Image 1 (cartoon, rainbow, N blue to C red):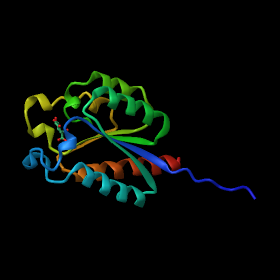
Image 2: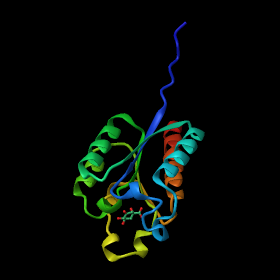
Image 3: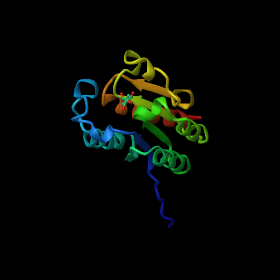
Length: 156
Ligand code: DQA
């Protein structure tokens, strides 16, 4: 009898510069959870949706671009907190525009309630949606959004 192999659907979660410092970095703005805390919660939450997580952080723009390209070929969605590159990176904009999977932009803080230079995002125009201002919870909300989009697609 032929064996059935179930391939786990995966979501790539990308974190930009300085997010490796979460926990001690401006806790009044970004909260006290570390990036590892966020990763652990996301992995647990992803299991409830039957999804796997590839989780990355880099302070280097090109590395993030490479992971967007990789995810576009292998995964079902991307959650990205591009941090400061949100406001500067045409390269990340172009990488996201070049792929077909849904991308959800996340920010821990409400970038629209902060300095003017944080009000523009190069990511938003190529993302399916943006979640900001809900702290670490935003990553879980983004995962719910992608899981729901994938479930809807299955019904079509
Ligand atoms: C951030 C907001 C950005 O403006 C900032 O540069 C960050 C973090 C957030 O998660 O709130 O590094 O993306």
